[in-house]
Amino acid sequence: MQSISIVIPAKNEETGLMQILPELRKYLPDSEVLVVNDGSTDKTAEIAAELGARVISHPFSMGNGAAIKTGARNASGKLICFMDADGQHRPEDIPALMESLEKGFDMVVGARAKSGQAGALRGLGNRFYNWFSSLIVGYQIEDLTSGFRLVKAAKFREFLSLLPNKFSYPTTVTMAFFRAGYSVGYVPIIAPARLGESHLNVWRDGIRFLLIIFKIGTLYSPLKIFLPVAFVQFLLGLGYYLFTFVTDGRFNNMSALMFTSAVTVFLIGLVSEQITSLAFKGTGNIGD
Image 1 (cartoon, rainbow, N blue to C red):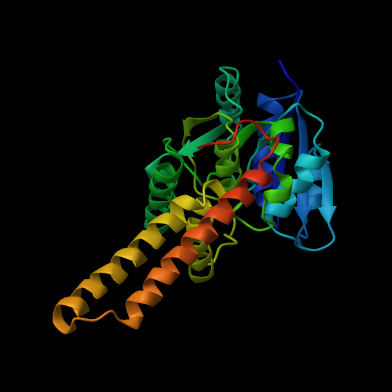
Image 2 (cartoon, one colour; image 1 turned 90 degrees about the horizontal axis):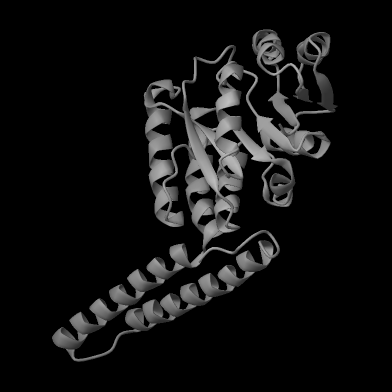
């Protein structure tokens, strides 16, 4: 069995850590448990250390993604399991992730059941993200935003520079793995209610997740976003031109502007596609 490190980003999660750290020792006694204390103001660091975890502390809160990157850089195992400190990810599910990874996957994600989504609105949003991302990559994505995942450490570290410092690291790394031609598997899990208060804000993070939708497409294949936009602009320009030609017998400036904009958007997408290919150069097989 390959060595495994458990990386747990934590900000003011003393309650959750008191529950999951003893359970981790029960189910994975030989694993390295690394808690990244992201500027907590409670006893997160002290409790984690008392319960046997290796603790690395940020001097101030840098974000969930930054904590994930710190953990990935310092983990010693060939496999890394990322899980939250709020009790929503159960240590007893890790062996199932490991069993699935042994089938040949490069990353295995714990996919939450619909009943395990935190709130109807967030559940609906997650289903939309899953549908949209599946459409973009051409593969079925069961849970795009789940932070409970087991990865091969060396391959995960290839994408550290692409990961954001805030909350959208699961989205980014999932799309990066697909883009690089790495395999991603899913194991169904049940996510209990979180312990303590959530750090998410409905309005602020709702807007942020809308931006993630566009980031998904531009990260994986920009032309899949830019080409339809350019095509719609071209059709609008053509339609308006035909209308004015039939009614007034002339070509109009607005149609010319739409045609020019369509070409510009297409060229931006083409350049973005080349930049994306360079960003993933040397990380597996580049996707279509």
